[in-house]
Length: 452
Ligand code: HAM
Image (cartoon, rainbow, N blue to C red):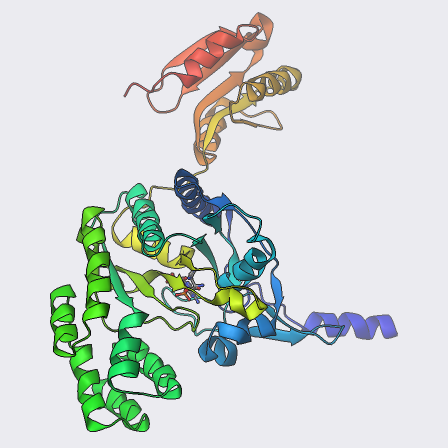
């Protein structure tokens, strides 16, 4: 009786085949693309001397409360209480984990420390183009580099990565700012309190994303003096480095100007200027940034969004009661990167897997030879997909094409009697019967360049 009821209940619950909202099932065709992105990320990081690291998927919520900012904590974090009564979160970003790890070893480690990781992160966001609840993020960070050179290296890594995918300055731009500028203008000049400055960052961060009346309303809430309010509007009008320097001149902020001018001189000297534009609205939503901040934007009109964000954070180690150790880094998401590459036709065709040889046999007698030949070729690095049952000639080619093989191999009756294999190049149809004991000839044939 009970069993029947259970079966009845089971029938009624329809389990969804869809993944949890905002996450992706990565089928092999999706994973091929993601692996391509990861491979270029790793290649780039290693080229600049960055070493891989990794951390746990779960962290205590306190770690993010310390400096990640209220949006992340109040709106985006996935948190729960574990069986030991600890409040834990699925990592929404990697930088706090990185800082926690660096704080354990920085005293003994050779500096600067250059580390990279490609973690998956979860944020409770409204799923839309370029924004999901789970994404993978390429993180590169440098700790303990001399001022401004670390920033330039990090910018250079991000540029190199995008160039490595075939992108140029016509496809993307780096919008840059420095939190020192905002602090100096509004804290020093307009004497805003720390609380007002904190709110001001949130307003500036949203300036381009909200309509002007919403912006006005946000400013009114800040209760700025008329002078500061005008200063803020003037600040938001700055379009480039020249405007910025004039603005700082008017406010007599010569030290800030000089510091940032030196930085921009280096940007030019290091040939990064064609990628970089000054933008006063870039301040970044995360609270730990203290200096240079930047976001990389797609220039394509149909995909005007940030694919990368980063900056300098001088004091993050202080949350572990450690000495300040300046860090700079960026995070670049796989979703936004893929959208960027697609919008500029820079994504190769990954509809098929990548295989060298699809090896078939036409009757049971061929099974053993096929197995042995596949084993030997794999020992020489050839990617062999073995048909596991006899396959007719007319079925072999479509199957080989579907598994992305460049060659198809036949072990039919004649081949078995001659101890040979027939190999066919699927691109130019060139065909050759080769003795299966002559592995070097087989290798020569299937590793030779295709002649169209
Ligand atoms: P972030 O700006 O929050 O920075 O994220 C960096 C990049 O990750 C974004 O530009 C975007 O490409 C991608 N991303 C973020 N959220 C999502 C999402 N919900 N869906 C898809 N992609 C997303 C950070 O996380 C900093 N911790 C980066 C950093 C490293 N700063 C210094 N070092």
